[in-house]
Image (cartoon, rainbow, N blue to C red; front, top):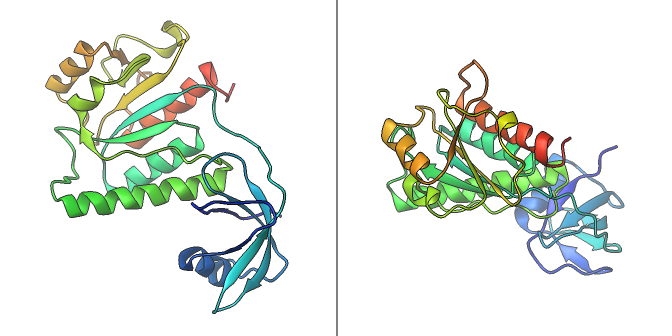
Amino acid sequence: MRISRFFLPQPLNSGATIHLEEESAHYVRTVLRLKKGADLIVFNGEGGEYPATLLEAHKEAVSVQLGEFNPRETESPLIISLGLGISRSERMDLAIQKAVELGVSSITPLLAERCVVQLDDPARKGQRLRHWRKVVQGACEQCGRNRPPPIFEPVKLEDWVTCQAGLRLFLDPGGTKTLRELPQPEGAVCLLTGPEGGFSGHERKIALAADFFALRLGPRVLRTETAALATVSAIQTLWGDLG
């Protein structure tokens, strides 16, 4: 039986008793309907995890007792920085969730010319960022990662490409390179993927000027979320920890 995992962004110590905050407590009590004595795993994002035992689960309180620290790590040895063109809600959520499962090191939502979703309102931008960070948290709980990768505030595409290092790639159906033609990276990989409308001609020129390779993924045109995830999977298989 799968043991549920919980991200608790607070100091954790072996033997400590932790009272869960309302959101996690509700999930344990109402959704999972776990009973006293149930086994859990908790982590706080600083690496490693703790086995835990559910001490109580009722309306007044849900608490767990932590066992001995387990230094288990699941991070990829390949650093992948993903610049993700902002797409519609469900597509963006899927791309973020699966990118985390596949081991990306960081995610930056990008404002591109052909983005369908506009985040001009600071309040809406903050709301979306909080939502995306929840998606990252949930993906880590599901896939076993103990270090949630950062998801940064949305920035303009042209600002992101100029501050990246390592092997720089952007997805382009008309690209001239394939992954097999590229050398194995010595450091990080920076992957730039477009929104639902793709890149404009101006944005392609910006990426090329910033020393990004135009990468082609076979003969078919992939949807934005498919393209991002297929590329991360291929990169991890060739150079990371999926091979």
